[in-house]
Image (cartoon, each protein chain N blue to C red):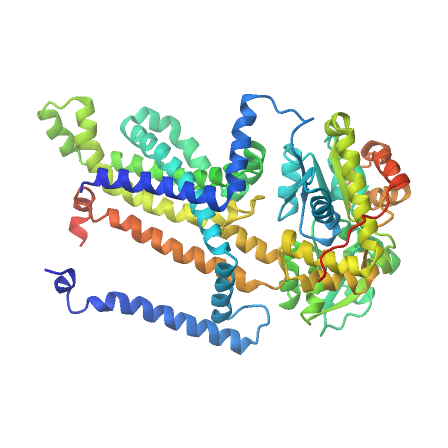
Length: 262
Length: 357
């Protein structure tokens, strides 16, 4: 049976509603710019032309790849560090008590405040933005992994003890699977933050990327069409990234955690 | 497929694909990373490290890209690598951390850094004049006195544009507290003036010319009217680099002196520079640089760039008055005039015909 046949009669609404809202938004934007007769703020069509110009110059793909490259590595490292560290803190309450205050001190510091440190340590290389993106995403991931272990239902652990599981088995077959749904939610939020930070991270002397596009366009005279083009591109790619992470939630290993919600 | 398998395949593929694409589309990024990791294996040697020069896309730093472009066109390579920053703090931090051995920087900021113990020496000036005070064309501000009680944007606490207002107030018999100074990054100034959130803006070009070109800005006065031969940016070099690489620093100063002479030699040269600098370095519409480099041609000047004691004494005095300088560093501490002296003796304009607009 085809997938379409499985859908409810209102499945088309899932696509039509957001598109309608987007269309209303675009019309409102265009009208407001026209009414205010602003010479600085661009109209949607001018932004589209700006994106076309970027594509023509071969900059569109170059910038998108540069930003995705930095976010991939910064965020990837944050997952590699944050998930194990968070699980560790969740399991050993002494370690949690020791590290938690420090984590809470670092967590609210904006990546922009770290720019001087990033330049000092990593110079004017790509490592500086990668470091900023790492910092922005590692704390939410750690905190969500810690909370996942701490909120685990004690009944799973007791059952596991009755079966006489070893420590490794306990971790692999009970702790990790039971925490996965919450960790994935944390990762999803952190990916949003990582992508959000790209503009700030690219304020350092890099010469590519969507954040750079915005900063560069501000330097380039009256090119606010390109500023908004950068904003639009960041938003659209953010949407795609979120959709990709949400795909993870459809796996059985994760879905059970959401079962009673859908 | 199980979650683990899917994740593994997807993420391995994604990391590989994005890294390969980055290598292909942004090779300089990967080169920079390589350089960074190699620097751990051996202690960096200042005498052979690539000579990077920090600059911002403003006309005060124009000689930097011009020298690089002409060097590359004439000799096929450039001994220096201009590194473009987007704002003062990042430019200064990269210099302090030693990533750029030389940089174009605000003169009062260089003096303040010297006072704070940074091994910095000013070796040459970036330009003379080249700033303007702009007001909205509909405003009722026609003289300095009309700015009383108004909000005026300047680029930075350490900018000479801020000191300029101290001097202009004195000339007009006003106190600095009569106007309200706010700090704002120059790229944001045109939009701020357009929306009338500030009454006047003052920074280096091309941001002032932009408001005029777009039809909502009017020149209140040019720097040359209030402070003739105004200096805002200088070329500064780290002292250890001066000690170990004298020849390179001299070549840099010579190159910049030649570019200055070349820029002031003819309007045709300026128009040509407006084209190649806009397209290759500043990524701006060439109309902007064309406008500010020609209307009027003495809006910004690139000759007589040797650092002179009386000029800096005036900056020091205004700096103390405005509270940004302590007065503990003097001309001899923060200027090394030897390179400029050697350059003025022998340097003539580049023999270079730029691409026609």
